[in-house]
Structure formats: C-alpha cells, structure tokens
Image (cartoon, rainbow over all chains, first blue to last red):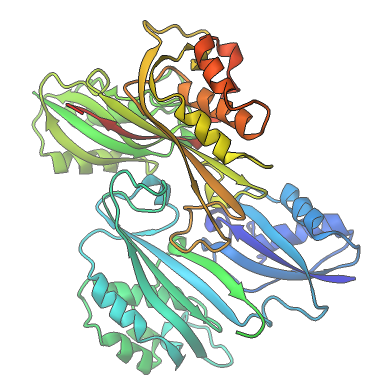
Length: 263
Length: 263
C-alpha cells in the first residue's frame, strides 16, 4: 500500500470535466480506469481542482492509493500508455500515506486567456475567449487587483451552489498582456494574431464553483466600459451573484498549478 | 475586376493540404468555394506555399481576381464567416493586377517545432514532433547553419519529384531553443512541459517538395549522435535523397511568412 501524488496536464475540450459523470468522458474516470487495469481493483482518485467541462489543466494534481508497489517513473509510463493524448501525466511521486490532493492543497493558480483581436489565431480557437472590440485593459487591471485579500466571494459563485463557507483568500489577481504581430517571434501559439492576448492570473487558497469565470465576466464588463472600475468592489461587497457579470466561457480557463505544504 | 492579396493562418491537422484534391478538404478548395459564393462565379486562388497535408500556416499568402468590387475589410469578414474556424483570413489588400502569390514571392519562412521531453504537453500534441531521449542541440545548430547560401538542395527533395532547377537560396537556417518549466510563465502553450522546445527556422527564396522536413529529419540524426556534424555538408553535396535523413512528420511544420517586393 502506497499513496501517490501525480501532476497532470489536459486539454479539457473533449471532457465533461474532471469529475466522473454518469455519461461522457471525464479525466478522473480515465485515470481511475487506467489504475484499475494497473492495480487489479478499484482505485478512487482525488483531484485538487474539480475543473468543469471544457476547462484545461497545465498542473492539476491528483492522489490515490495503490495496493501493488511500482516505481514512480514506471507509473507515469503505465498511465500515459493507457490515457488518450489529450491527458498526460507529467510526474508522479510517493506521498505521505494521508496525503489528499484536494484537502491538502494550500494554493491553486488559475489563468484565463482572452484573445482581443478582430480575428482569432486558429491555434487559439479552443484555448481563449475571443472578444472583438476595444477593451480597456488598464481598467481591468485595476479592478482585478481589488479582489486580492480575504473576502466573501459569494457574488462570484455559480447560482444554486452553497458551500460551507464562501470566504476565500486570494493572494494574487492580476492582468498580464502580451503584444503581438502576425508572425510571433518567440513561439507560434503564444500570442493572438492581429491583436493582444490578455491573460488573467488568480491564485488563492480555494475557489468557489465558477468563481474565476464569473470574475472574468465581470472584468470584461469593466473592460468594455459598461461598468465603472469601482463596481468590482461593489459586486464583491454585495455577495449577490446577480450583481456580477456573466460566466466567461470554459475554453479560456486553465488550472495552472497546485501547491502544498507551508507557503 | 480587382486583384486581391490575402494573408491567412490555418491549423493543417484536418486538411489534405493547401492544394485542392480529388477527395478531402483542402484550404485552397475552401477559399475557392467561399469566393464562388461571394463573387458568383469560379475564382481560381493561387497560394504562395503549397503546404502538404497536416502542415500549418501562420502567414500563408494567396491571390485571386474578383469581378465584383468589395472593401478589403468586408472581404475578410465575408471569407471568415464562410470558412471553418481552423482557417482564418487575417488581412486582405488590393494588389497590382498582375500580382501572383506564388510567382511573386521573394522569400518564405518556415518553422519546425520539436518537443524534446519525456512527456509532451497535450497542447502541443498536434503542433510538434515529439522526440524522447537526448538531442545534441548545439550540434544541430552548427549543422543547420551550413545550409545557408545558394545550393543545389536535391538531397532534400521528395523522392520522385524533379523540379526545373533544384537550386535555392537559403538566407537563414537556425535552431532556437526555449527553456521551460511545468508552469510556463509567459504563456501556456509556448513551451513543452518537462523538457525543451526546439524550434528550427529556415528562410529562402523557394523550397523543394518536403525539403524542410527532410532537413529536419537529417538534423535530428545529428542531434541523436547517429551522424557526425559534417555529414550535413556531405549530404548536401551528394545531391542524393537516399543520403539524407527521414522526412520529419508534417504536424511540426509551419509556414510562418511570405515576403514580396525588394528585399
């Protein structure tokens, strides 16, 4: 018996989300199926972030207990040969017996990508929210910063969900932009063509359901000049989901990293 | 009657290539179909580079003559609404009546992406050649440079093809590498996970069929230590396709840009 911690990346486009559902392919389901084949019995897998349908991951973390003993490198290979190419296990390590990817997570970082160009680069079409028309990125950046700190984020949670406590500590909430040309120098798909790539990064000790996407939807209202910058503060203080902006589409969202231990 | 020059990007994964074929979707075929609908009659389209099946484009250029008059911005929009999301017209401009995208091209730039990591980032799976195991990138860089200049590139052309002249001027042939981590800072899909992204750039006045991919296949033989560095020079001088390395897979290749006019 050993507890393992794995780090994985996936293209969320073809999945119903992290969590196993009655119908449709889920990342958790694929990993559990692969581990059952490997370990000879059911292996429940816990994921740090339960990403929704269409949401991507660069550094999701999952944990599980295996009956058989296996080297971590062999585990990575054995999982990857059983998984489709849009899910890749990047690394595996032995963890303390009581390690749990979700309950033990100290900080998660998400990134949301917006392509603000008349025409979206075809290589970004499944990995960004395409927004045409002017966006006041500076205003969005100021509004983003006011979410940093410990707050009740009820205004940004999915309608109908009620967590035990809606308070979360957000340690970083920033807008980063990348300039661009039609022939990006550094790499091919790192920038939008004919416009700016706007990236929003948020890190915190936990996130409510749809929280990042509702924040991004609200930032875009500000970017489009429909709301004044200080409305962000008002929405946050209202604790009322109806005051926030629309939920931004899933395809722009990436779970970037999950951290454990003392921070 | 007006001649137009358009610049376009496409994800080559779902196409039989640029050129219209008896069966399968081609980029040229899609654009010609869209223009026929727009102009009311057949519009032959010339492409600067006849990219093969699976090869991508960031800045392909095409030309055609329309009977009806149309503003260039309206032309971009009209084409994009008729094209699938994996082909995007980035810009359009009026060109001299005798402009021809292929015959007028002065320089083309291609990029080939190699992911040299144990596990490939799922976001790169359709856009790079995944090579596991050590690659001597410095040796590849030295070998790449020796192709710059005017040479007979017969050794790197597809077997069975015989162009009028196999001589081409290569103005740039370089290896560029990008370091990486599991959580790339700058952007999501710009680097491989757990390994280096190796990018090969080549520019010249023209390319023989499969030339870039045969060059990359040869560079990889050197990177893997199967060939000494100076074998590249020998292969080039041999004019013999059987001496070169295997043709690298299409999915790593991008037509980056096409230039016209005095250089």
